[in-house]
Image: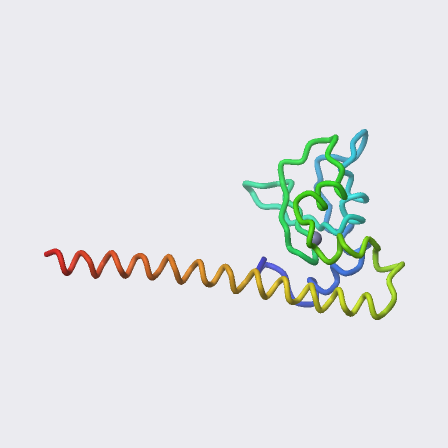
Length: 141
Ligand SMILES: [Zn+2]
């Protein structure tokens, strides 16, 4: 999530930009999860060595991998992230009004911030647990 520049993240608002991220996608023919359908469903490709077919929604940042040829991107998005503002709007940027576009961009940033805050809280909890264990060791000496 931190591997993208702010401008690149903003560019993911554009379906054609999302499509360009699928340079090395394993499914292209005779399947539901083509790059075109994934980009249309709000996803861009963000592969790693462990997860070569990892995609992420540009609004809710839901990450999905382990795709099978019969998986339909829009249905997968709806079933894994029902509250995603992009899912609820059901339009790509060509059919949005400027107001809808700006509202979605605001929500995109809120979801991103929310995810970052949650991950920082988890990090803090892990650190607190380690410190507590160290302190308990000192008490029990
Ligand atoms: Zn989403």
